[in-house]
Amino acid sequence: MILLAGIVLVVLYIEGMLVPSLPTIQSNFGVDTAQVTLIVSGYAAAGVALSPVVGKLGDIYGKRKIMVFVMFTYAAAVTVTGFSPNFAFMVTARTIQGIGLTIMPLGMSLMREEFPREMVPRAQGILSAMFGIGFAISLPLGSFVSQDYGWRWTYHSAIPFVVIMAILLLLLVKESPYRRPNTRVDYLGALFLGLGLAGIVAALSQGEAWGWTSPLTLGFAAFGAVMFVPFGIVERRLTATKREPIVDTHLLAERNVTVTNVVLTVAGLGMYLALFTLIYQFEFPVASGGYNSCSTPASCANFPILTAGIDILPLAGGMTLVALAASVVVSRVGVKPLAIAGGLITALGFGLEAFATSLTAALVIEVVIGGGIGLLNASIINLLILTVDPKDMGQATAMNNVFRNVGGSVGTPIAGSLLSTFVLTTGPFAHLFPDHTAFVYAYAIAVLVTVIGTVSILFGEEVLGSRRHAKFAHLPTLPARSRRSAVAPSPLPDPISGPDAHAEELPALPRGVS
Image 1 (cartoon, one colour):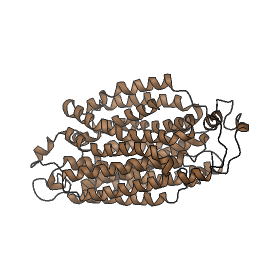
Image 2 (cartoon, rainbow, N blue to C red; image 1 turned 90 degrees about the vertical axis):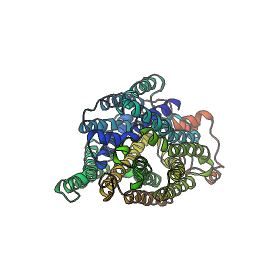
Image 3 (cartoon, rainbow, N blue to C red; image 1 turned 45 degrees about the vertical axis):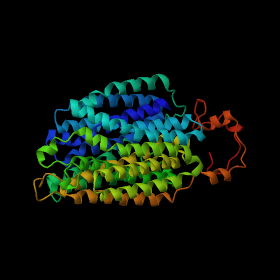
Image 4 (cartoon, rainbow, N blue to C red; image 1 turned 180 degrees about the vertical axis):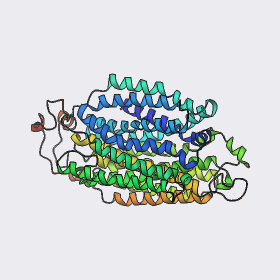
């Protein structure tokens, strides 16, 4: 648990430390606010396409083995990114670096297979809390390194930690007993999905520079949309032939799987959109709706990156504390009440942030947003991992990662497009910084999508809580060895398709109860 949490922490540190430096990178490479979002959205789009492939490879060859490979590939990409000579090279390196997004679902699958069921919610809460802790560490530390030594050193300084974690993973974590060597990987579906997202992300990121009605912008948007047609055909054909597509309709037939995917898609969109908007708001002048007190463009350019990194800390702190608390109480309270509360709190925070009139108010509201996100993330994922059969866990978590990162890959360029489109037209900052309207629209979209996700939680079927436990209180208590076997049986010649050596120890349970 400590090692898996540490790996998630390192990856989030590397990704979080980049955020406060985005305005500086934008200035260094001479690109606009919308174009610089490619650094984030390219990474997320690659993660979307790679997650189902890597998840399936984990099912075939072993999750630990594939996770070690991913860690070393990620380390190589991080190394290359730090030496980027131009913007195009950095976007390419960051896109390869997107393989890091596959680490989380692999870790979740290992956790679900190795931990007893009753420990899974708390372990999942700890992993969710790593999101907040990762940001809490990366934002100030990355800002400090970037400010004093340059943003490239934020990458150079992280490489040893990635390599150390990969070696520890290889030495200390045992391989998963669940294997499906005859499974095929849906490479064609991943290709069409990646191309579709790439076209849409490119149109959103470059639309302001190319012109929203230009043939280039419309062409990329149309190309991205068209790519989803063959993607749908491939997925339907694989489902019909009982092979495993990226978006498995059989798994989506599980109500909780669909609900979790919908919620995390819109939550990812809202979170990335708001986070990107917040960072720029902290570094932009008051005249444009930001919180930087600079009076001229030159003085705004000298705004300390460290200040922006510290200003985002309340969000990370709220996310961490609430996620840890949720991991303790979710088994007793239930998933749905906590997830609905988290969604509503997050939406409220986004709405309040749109009309904050001072830096102090913005920082206080950040805690509310972070708490809502932490509560939502730490609770809702239990609907998935406590519903899906362990043999399908690799595919289910990879598919969930696809939906989660689709939201993230789209949310960031939407924010960048708004900040590039609605700009000041008068005063010393005319055509240099966005108008306050851009920030209001960004938060309004975040509120809308978060509310949509919160409403969809109502359609889920509860898997935890006091009523759930009372409903099955009459069932016999399993011996410790039997409970362990039900979650992660000892390696067998064919633990999935063959007979379960421990099946005779387990009493018959009602449908839907593991």
